[in-house]
Image (spheres, rainbow over the protein chains, first blue to last red):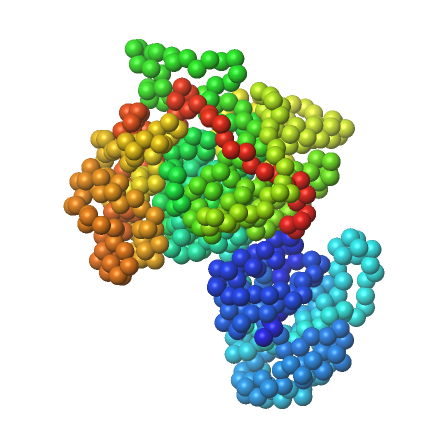
Length: 473
Length: 144
């Protein structure tokens, strides 16, 4: 049977991959029959209504789902399709309390016209009481016009009449309202780089977070991703090279754990550790179902790993007869680190730590300039499931989702090429992305006369909590 | 740091990873705390196959738990609610709030403070070794 999924008209390139991920979580087979990035309406095939409802219940980017009773480009076509498709269903609903809803995407209808549309479906013979509050069944007529975004992008013209009309019986709603619950403004522990609730929830969905699973974020920060994975029932762990980021500055508070308390998911929290991905303490065996992360890109702060800078030999300082590194409060030296090396480490870690079919969902910045296109890192033991892009105008970021392949199965990486960091010892030399974005911002600020010693702030992006300011050198 | 986490970590020194003596890390001066959490049998069932049972027995012994069965519960044994509850209590509800985790190979001690273990290495131990290269795709649009 065919179903109509109604999406929110936002984060378009994330919508299909998220819908497919939600179907995987619900154990439902799905076939997408029609999808258009400029439209909220998407027609799909599911085995049954229960599969459709279960899938959409997990979706953040969908709003609701309907049993498709008919579709057409005009009302004549729609009525014809309704008769053909759903006549056998009418009888089952002709005496239940019901309501009829008419919505227009990028269009409006007068009350008068709406009444006229409603009456045109009289032939279905519904005699049950009309009930506006909590009816047993809801029937929706959904009209689709052309919105301004499409007009601007494709140069098409606006239309007076809808180009597509659907009739559907409502089956269920998505978990989109959880975005409000997880709103950063209401969250106890956040920093300037905390990922917003909507995309954190989507990230957890892409990695198939679910009850019984074990999830991990190697760059946990303030815990946006693990909080969302926990919301969907997974048990979670996090690590960060800077323990201050997940502990927080306030010694009387519990940092990331405050958020688990706030959302009443304390039972989904396992641990946070101070550790470095390049010298990870985790043993080499598959134990994770999902890895969700937004590695530090190091635009404002240079990337850091443990180690000495070039020219600084690894000497052990002895203080009061005790090696410095054994004294309480020792802060290990960190050195600049390349963007590519970091991502290689994430992929290699994922290959070792994920169970078969476990997923890695990783954010990565990129530039919109084709000349500066940043490649998708690949590994032969990982299959790229999806790549989605969030555009900020002068830069963009991608969410890349990988699946850990079973041993003996390899993904085709022949189209890939090897890439290593350029030789260099400071953060700019090692990080092409940082170099490009910083230069661009400085140029822009200079022309706007904004260069008065202030640090740059990128939308959706900034310093990680508590990182040493020396790192931005 | 919970008992389950101790079963997934070993010494962060790369050279130690190949030595059997580095796993499990040994708790020293451990202060234990119990915290009641929701019982989630599906999680225990899912995670037990990934647990290194010998290492868990050793850890349980060090922390003074009654000894675990010789063999890892499998199949039918994972349907027994009492078995699952006992494992839940040890793996998830028990945590070490203060203490040290010591590597049996290099003797490096990782400290646990306020429940958080610190695995950062001093620079002479954390030498970076050659890492395998990752392949990169230049044209990402093929996935979009």
